Image (cartoon, rainbow, N blue to C red):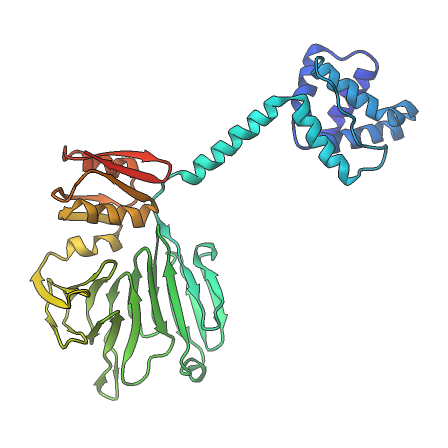
Length: 393
């Protein structure tokens, strides 16, 4: 309600000309947050405009009378306001007055709180969310960084393009070569893509961390990964020598020249899947080997066991292209992927170790649609409670 309209209603009230419809209009405005401030402004202006001293002197009485008109059976508490003076106590008094006069406000507040909680508990697909940790420890929330934005830092620039990807450009090789590192940290329900100064691209999956230098040295290009990421490594040659690209993942050291591959280290085992080129894997126990395209290695950290098998990379790297893709995959593995991407908790009520699932679906579908697709197997059902998914037989 505008101040001018409220002034008119107050004047009509004083003149005993307020209609039932106008009283209802006043009642509706009475329950808004801005009523007190607008009421005081309106009565002050009426006093100045009309020279009616009763408007100013009796503004508190007018307020209380209007309150009684709105709630005739309720006792009116004293309104702690003086003409042309608003104290801190008046704010508290106004709040108490609202709640005392109309318990439905409390009910409304409860409903709004419930809706807010419901929105917070809504299970939504993940997206491009990550924290960028700079060399000096400062943290940039990349989700809040606008696209087409450049961060100008000492010795290098970081550009976030229209796709939300990060690109690095060196502006002072001397500063950048002093051993500066950046780190990308993705939460549950987050992923991020970046391009290193050498042109190599990294797609970082949810719940993962990757640390990389801003300037690779002349002998090697080395990064550290915890979680899952897909790499498209660009070949780099200096003085007729190919500079190897090395990825450290716990006990595993991967060495390549130019290739595309995926590393998954979420669990006790480290899975490396090669799409193009060749990679050399090595471990402290001297085990390891060479991977060729369409091969996947598995290193079990607790056992120190190492194996290589032929696979279809499609199912391994579908996540970077916006899909879930499973081929005879255990239900627990499927649910762990959903847990990371939708940022939920999983509760099992029964033994589901023998259930396998195959299928492909967009990562950006609602969680309900994804769960219904799994339920089509006929061997499992789901129940959602807030941010928890209960798996039942």
